[in-house]
Length: 129
Image (cartoon, rainbow, N blue to C red; front, top):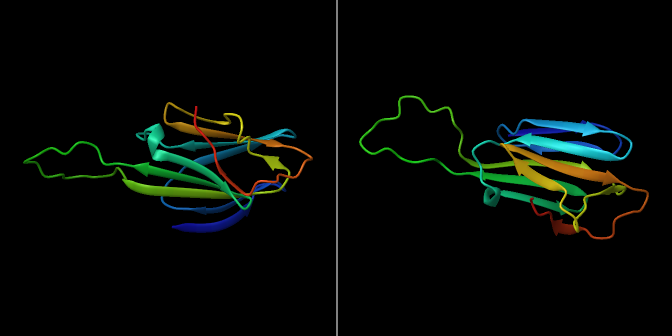
């Protein structure tokens, strides 16, 4: 597990990452967009939660089909539960009421909106498109 606190800007900080969740974070004056490569995962295997100003991404990747009577000589694919978390400031709106997360072609994209209004809810889930 990688545990790092990397300030990306005044609005978002990478807190931790387990295993390989390759992530790009883009930001401008209005939005922060987080793009995470997670091929081979179904939408049901992805959970996005905000709790106490932390955005948690939890991905469960299940092992593919098993071939009976064969020995696996090389296994590079990883299976299990992968996590990534980001600390977000009070002025970042995670759009609980709107669909701000989408999963397409193996890439999860979460869009966060900057606002001058401080959020009031401390825990909720974000649904995927």
